[in-house]
Amino acid sequence: MALVRVTLSIALLAGFLVAAASRPAIAYPSSIIACPTGEVQTAGAGSAFLYDAYYPDGFQIWGGLNLGLGGGFTYGDTGKAFEGWELGVDLIGWGGDPVDARLALDVKGQLLGEDPLWPALAAGFMGFTPGRAEQSLNVLYLSATKTLAWQDLSLGRLSGGIGSAFLQGGSTGFAATFPFSGPSTALLMAGYETPSLGPLYLAVDHVGGVSDYGGTNVALHLQTAEGTFLAAGYAFGNELLASYPPGPFAYLSTTFTTWGAGR
Image (cartoon, rainbow, N blue to C red):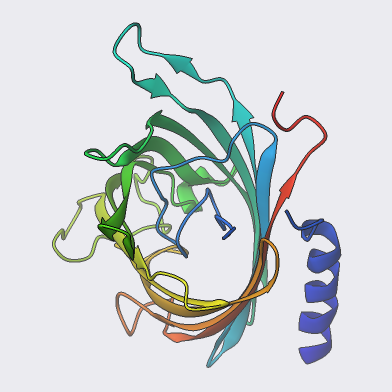
């Protein structure tokens, strides 16, 4: 099993880590750890990551790639603008009994850019697996991100949002957790990133519900190169006896730009 994990990690690393290009927006779509932010990648810019988590009866390997597509426009003479679209693709693999792997798709549009008074605001869906919708998260969500500061002192960034797992029907892909319960498909999300201290920063976030994405995560990030971070942390499952137990994780993430960036 260890050889399989190492081999798969090397294959994913070769496929997903590209030339580094600031702090990356990792995951599916751009996010703190698991909680989506209210921002998207700019046109031609993207990020990639490789995540590995360990559990008592197996492990999870997750690779992801997202890319800014552009498509922004202004809202008339309001001074506000739609900032563009972002597309993400994830490969999620579980090692254990049984072994499982699937592709998931994510789309996010940034409705508003951040300004001194208002947060960045985005809407999207994440965790859709074609052909296996009944086992996917399938969350429609609205998220916001605000940079915090006191005069010239950076206080980090705060994100939050709400979503609904809209295609559940008998699905095994999601179960509601506090403050929701029973047949509810709603979930809350929140997260915080500290200011950088040299090459280090700390991030914590929460995604409600029992699913591939659900849980509370804490991770320390080390910048290893411009735009590239190595993180180590711990994931606390939303229900300790559920199929997604707590456990340590690590990931490597990077940002990049394509030949069309800025066009």
